[in-house]
Length: 297
Image (cartoon, rainbow, N blue to C red; front, top):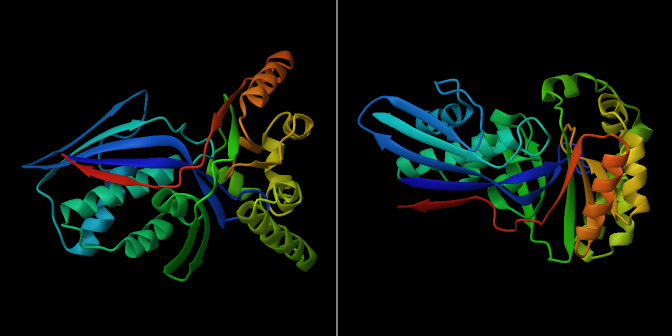
């Protein structure tokens, strides 16, 4: 039996649209085995996914099999995920990376991780989630044609991440559909400068600069219209001491970067949500610096 554990991811990270992402210690777990015949896909922990060949994990595995020239006789796939689906925390990337890594073991490790990264980014459409899902840490990911470059930076343990998840979802396709096809040069320059500052601040420990670094003008101003209380929530996080707050992926999850233990922040934000009739849950996570783990047995 092949076991694969893949971390959740938070992407875009403010001004780092389709480029900056981080792995968080919330996980999707797969058990995969080649069998004599058939296809069996089962789920636990409330995971509601397809149980046929349209299943995302299976489709990711199929891409590896095709690339390696391997035809499995039959497959057993068990999915157990703590990552909420369609909430902007990389649930689809976890399926893609997990499926590809499992298939690669069946194929006797025919493909290097760099090739798996390229294939995963092509399948997902952008690399900022699949990069940290595979390599862990804080990742700068760049898709260049069919190849993807990823630089993973391991973060110290002095940061925590408040993950605020509502009881509704926003489909990625819908969220991308609201973005403009063209932007002004000054908007691009604004984001380039702040994404660069964000990387420098996060990796050097100058956390007071993070708030400026997440000041986005490319996607958050358009996507926030689908999220009730967006501006109010952002304002409250900064009032409670967040170093930076941003929309995770295409949303609707909102993430705040905190210095030190986040329990006080969690309690106060939970009280804020309750008092304002916002059906949100706030949890505290840490950066996963390891990335995906594959075990046999």
